[in-house]
Every structure is written in structure tokens, then in C-alpha cells.
Image (cartoon, rainbow, N blue to C red; front, side, top):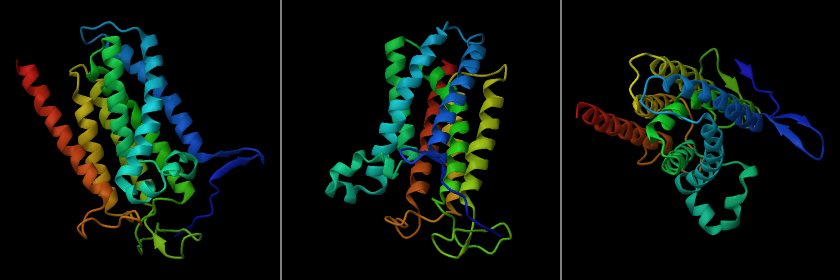
Length: 264
């Protein structure tokens, strides 16, 4: 059993505080950008399309904007709509917390689609690259969630349980670390083994990301407390579970479309 005593703030200079969560976003984007360029260089040799690697630098700007807008609006709509309808100004207070992974995902997909049309690049090439690089940011983000003591797990008696004294004295599953492992490390290995395989087919990593992230998130939700303002929908499913199930369906749908396209 571990008693959580980690400080969410790495450095406090008085006029500005450097938080672990902010660093997770920054390093997630930087490492994702680095890996993304490596992957793009690799797959350009296997598909019939020439890329200007500088375009990927421009894509990062689209991704950052789409991630922030989608993540915030997703949280507002999926997790706390009633509150924000009555407090519209609070929607822009991102510094107070409140981002949705599923909202960020939708935002990034839309932003990438618009970018691909502008640059005349196959959208699934870009989405595959993003899918393979994203687990880095997810991994760091979940570690930051643990440091912040947020998105806590359910009560448990397992020997590796964690107590968050600023919440209560109940031993809980470190569900943030479960998610870091599944949605970060395991998903990263699966997708990068696929994209660096000689038999890689464009679009594969996009639908595999949706399917496997959805599965891993649903597993993690079994050990995670539901959002307090929502609880369980239909007294059974958390919002994260429902959205992740829709991700799986979307992944299977895209897989079916791509298989038919390749057969033709």
C-alpha cells in the first residue's frame, strides 16, 4: 500500500508554476512529433506517395489546436453540459481542468482531415502516423493524472493499492497507472509493430487504435471511479465506457470499409 504524497507542481516560482500535467502535454507533443517524422519517412517508402516532411511540422499546429478545442468541448458536452450551459464563461477556463480524451480524439481527426484536404495528402496516412505516436502522450498524461491524484480508482484491498489522503483514507486501485500501461505502453507496441511491418496497409493503424484503445479503456473503467457529476449511466456504464464502445464500433466500421476498398 502506498500513501500518495506527490506534488502536482514541479517548480513554483511564485509568478508561475510548472506543473507535471503541463510537462506531459509538452513532452508528449515533442516526442510524438519526433516519432511521427520517423514513421512518415519509413512508410513513404512503402506507399505510392511523396511527402514534404515540412508538412508534418505544419500538421502539429493543427493537432495542438484541435486537441485543445476538441478536448475542452468534449468535456463540456460529454461530462458536464448542464453546468456549462449555466456558466458559459467557465468553458474557456481550461487552466481549472476538464479535458476529454474522446473529445480530443474527435478534434484531432477533424483537424487532420481538413489538413489532408488542404495539402492533398491521404488522410489515413496522417491518421496512422498520429495513432502510432499518440500513445506516448497518453502514457505521460496518465502518469500526470496519477501525480495529480485525479481520475482515482475504486476501493480495493490489493497489496499495491494507493491512498489519496487529500480525498479520503480509502485504499484504491491506481487506475491511472493501469491506463498508462494499457493505453500507453501496450498500445504503443501494438501499433508500431504494425506500421514498421513490411506488410503495412494504409489505414490499419487508424482502426486498430480505435479498437484497442476502446478495449483497454473499457477494461480500465472497471477499476476507475465514474465521474462524480455523472455517475453510472443506466446504473451500469460510465461515460468513458460508452464512448469507448463507440470507438470500437467506429474502428470496426473503418476496417470493413478499408477491406472492401483493398479488395476492389
